[in-house]
Each structure stands twice: as C-alpha cells, then as structure tokens.
Image 1 (tube, rainbow, N blue to C red):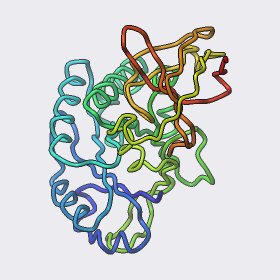
Image 2: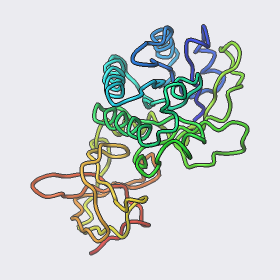
Image 3: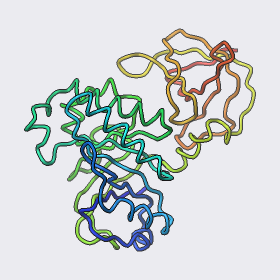
Image 4: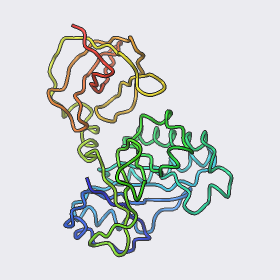
Length: 290
C-alpha cells in the first residue's frame, strides 16, 4: 500500500486527486503534545471520507513522565473514537523540535519504551490498531525493542533502498511529490493491508471460515527475547489474553480454512473455563499433535 502522512503544515489538500494518483491510504496527524488537536485534522477526515480514502491517525507525543503519558493516551483515544478509522493509530516518538532533549528525556530508553508500551496497550484495549512511529536511531538507541515486539513499527528511514528493521510501514521519503498536495509530502509503503486487517480484527473471528481439525497444538519456542507465544481475543491484532511458554499444549477448537490477510492461518484454541482465544499458525513456533 502507498500511504502518505499529512498535517496542518501541508495546507489544503485535494484528496480526490491524491487517490487518483495511486495513493491507497492516509495517516493524518490528529494531535500533538498534551493535548492540541491538529487544526486541519477534521477537514482532512471529511475529505478523505468523501474521496473514499482509508485513513488513520498519528499523535506527536510530548510526554515527559507517566502522568503526561496517561493524559495523552486518554485524550488520543477519546478523540479517535469520534471517527471511523480504517488505518492504525500511531504514537509518534521523535524529537524534531528538540523538546525532549531540552527537558532531559531524549535518551531515557526506559521512559520512552514505557510511553510507547502504555499507549499501544490502551489503544488496543480501545479497539484500535496501534503503531509506533520513529526513525532508525530511535528504534535502535532510544527504545527497548524487545518490550515492544507485539506492536507494528512505522519506520522513518529516508535515502535508503529498504528498511533496516522489520516494520509494518516504511516511510521512505519526506520529499514525495503527490498530485493534490502542495510542496513536499511524506510517503510510506505499508507491508500489510491494514484496512482489511482492521476489518477482520473488529469482527474477531466471526468473518473467518473455520474448519474442525480435532488436534492439539504445542508451542515449540516463543517469539523474541521473552520466549513467549501469544493468544489474542481476535484474529490478526487482537489484545493479548494469554502468554504461552515452550512446551505448553492447548486443544485446537477450529482452524481457518484459508490464509488470512497477514499471510498466516489462525487457530481458535480452548483456554479452559469456557475461554477461547486465537493464535497465528507459524510452524517455526508451533507443532500440531494428533
């Protein structure tokens, strides 16, 4: 997917022309700090809807402590709930104006990570698809990536032939020339079809064709440094409701008849006490037992 991101700094935009040019979706700056709404956000939303362009939001965070972190997350969710988003909601972790540097938190990896983790958790619980935006230096040197592995990255890495980290979206230029947008424009490639994923996620497993396999599944190894495999309350990017360790075995209730939009089949598993959850079927981490 070809995605542009815009803010009030881009001025007036003709989103019908943007769509005709081949852009597939738009990420709109909805807000910044704690808490200022982007002056053109509501106009951009209206115009994207009229043009039939999927859109999501990003919030430029100024949080310097946990109190500000909680305030920003709460108000971001309150704002996002007013709209019908079909793209992710991103927390923008950068320091383009030097605000974090001036206040001494720029290199506080623990704080920066906590802000991203808390915001993403709150967004997911509110039903949104969380995304973390940062440049390569931030991801490598100002965040603990092992603690954020559940969430997609939106990597800003310009003047490169490709992203240096795995990511859900790669912002490859700030100098894009897009018909309908005056001047420069940030342009990204989304490696996931977020509108389809978000629709599936909102339906839980209801929109999936399931078949009965009559098997159990065992975790062979976990993901990332925590060595855990996750069970979610919905396919694709539901909230984590259980964490499994290597050796754990669960009864498989059903398996998707086809590969879903993230490139994997999914299984519905029994967690006990009448609870069920969903797991991505990656045979590097799981094996099926008859």
